[in-house]
Length: 450
Image (tube, rainbow, N blue to C red; front, side, top):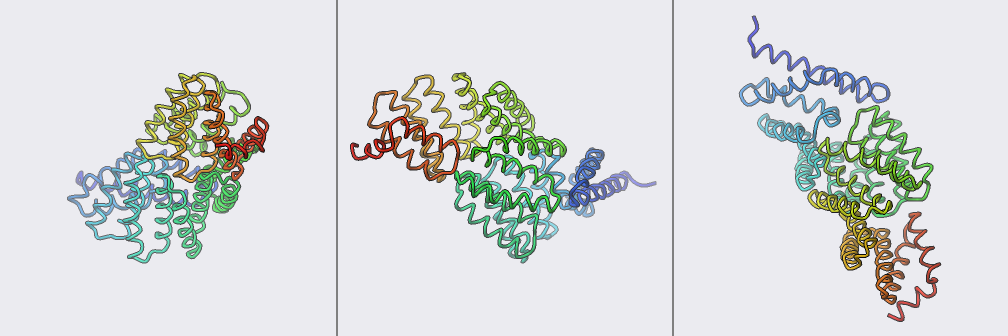
C-alpha cells in the first residue's frame, strides 16, 4: 500500500502533467487558447494543491523540490493569467531560492523574470527592476540570447512605468534587435507594442499607432489572442487621441470581446475604462461613469492598484465633465495617493492636471494654479509636450479669471508653441480655440510685452 507521501507525490506529478498539457495548448494559439483555459479552470484546484504540496515539502524532499521548480517553469503564462499577483510573487520568491539550491541557473533566471512580472503587476517597479537586472546578468552569463532580449524588454517596461520614457525606448530597441536576431516573433510583437506605448505616453500618437499596427500583425500571425486584445486597446487609444472616435469605439469593443473570452479580468477593467471615455466623447456621461465604476470595482476586487488608480483618475475627469466637482476632487485625490504609492508618473501627471481642473471649476484659483504647476513639472520630466501644452493652456485660463491678462497670454503663447508640435486632436482644438480667442498675432506679441 502506498504511503501518504507517495500518494501526494503522485498527485502532484500528475497535475504537473495536466498543467504542461494546458500550457502546450495555450502556446498553440487560436482556438487552442480557449481549450487550454478550460482545461486549466477544470483542474485548477488540483493543480494548485499539487503545486502547494511540492512547495511545502521542497526543503526536505529532493523530488518535491524538482517538481515544485517544474510547476513554475512549465505553466508560467497560464499562472499569470489565472493566479493573483501576490500569490505568484510568493511562489516565485521561493522558486528562486530553490533554483539556487539546485544550482539551476537557467531556471533561476526564468523565475527572476516571472518574479519581476509579478512585482510589476503589483506596481512595485523598483523590486521588478532589480529582478530583471539579475535575470539579465544570468542570461548573458549563460549566453541565452532569447532570454537576454526578453529581460531587456522587461527592463524597458519597468523604466517606462517609472517615467523615463526615452531610456525605455532605447532598452526596447536593443531588445527588438535581439528578438529579430534569434527569430523570436512573439517577443518581437510584444516589444513593438511596448515601443508604441512609450511613444503614446510622449504624445507622439501617429508614431505609436505605427508600432501598434506592426505588433498587431505579429500577434495575429502567432494566434496570440491575449496580446491581440491588449494591442487592440492600445491602437484604439491612439485612434481616439488622433480624433478617430468611430474607429476607437470599434477597436475597444473588439478588445472587450477578447478579454471576456479569455476571462482576463484585469484586461476587462482596462477595456471598460477606455470604452467609457468614448461614451464621454459622445456626451453620454451617465453611461461613461457607469462603465468606469464597473472597471473600478473589477480592479479593486483583483487588488490591481494600477487599475484602481487609472479608474479613479478617469472617474474624476468624468465627474469634472459632469459638473460634479467635489466628487471629482475626492476621486482624484484618491487616485493621486495610489499613483504616488506605486510610482506611476503618468498617472500622477493625469491626476494633478485634473485636480487643477476641479479647483478651477470650484473657483479656487490659487489651488488650481498649485496643482497645474505640479502637473507641469511632472509632464516636463516625462518629456510629454501635449501634457505640458494642455496644462499651460489651463493655467492661461486660470490667470485670465484672475484678470492677470499679461500672464495669461504668456502661458497661452507657450501652450500654443508646444501644442503645435503634437499630433493629438484635442491639442489641435485647443490651438484653434486660442488663436480665435486672442488671435495668433497677439499671442506672438505677448512675449515682447512681457
